[in-house]
Image 1: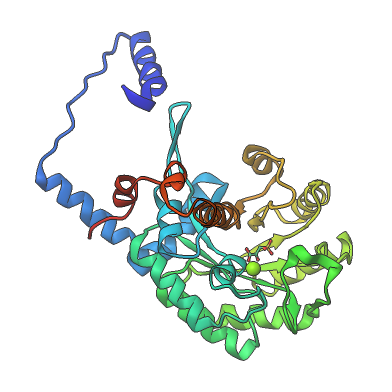
Image 2: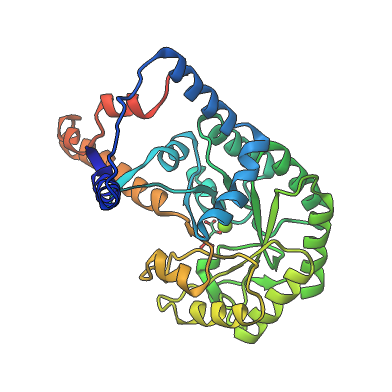
Length: 337
Ligand code: SPV
Ligand code: MG
């Protein structure tokens, strides 16, 4: 009966309460159905359909989860990983194309050095093998004159959302906080960038999310809220509030205060530092998108370093075997067509 056993039992008991009976048909293994399934999968990956799906899932579920992807293989992990729990198949709803992880995979610092052409190439690699919606980390968005082109390109490719942060000049990763020199953009400039991006997009589905760095840069809650409301007024479809504190207190306070005045604009969180809160609690508080921004990168690279060291220490590969994914598993992860 598999992972759906609890659901099946509930159905049987509800039916029994009014004398009903569950009639089950065996699964059909006809080639025609396989072809239909294949076609449905192909359609999901088409730009118009993929782009629109983030809004749809947000509407349906209220809370969406996204996992970092920075290559075809990490895209496949985000696409295919399923855990069966309490009668449900749990999966990630979307993918986060992190600038930190895309840069790290190329051995480069996260300072907008990996250019858009290269970032678009990563999107293409991921899109080629997946169907889930993509949220693109657009860093600062660059110059407004450039951002409008980025918006159109992302939209055309089938990306669902771009998140841009209200910083200017040489961007550094937010998790450095005030340890490095970082400059926050003015409300006026950043609002104008958002407005220009919204004007440039062609469809209703594409979303621009304003990321507020006030808490990261220790400018205070009032500044964060003032910016959030201003950016929504400028046209932002969502706001992301970030923090590098382990304590989720300031994020919870932001959500509560933002929700006092704005009940609908989606709130996006990246709980890398403040990672103790469960998704259901975030949902109850009023958050809508939870991004797991770098966990594949941070688990993958130490495992690779460990394998490299093991080979150097033992002068052969045998001792690595137990740490390796089997060839069979890797073959099943990667589809043939
Ligand atoms: C990223 O994943 O690149 C992000 C999130 O921007 S953070 O690293 O937390 O700034
Ligand atoms: Mg980033």
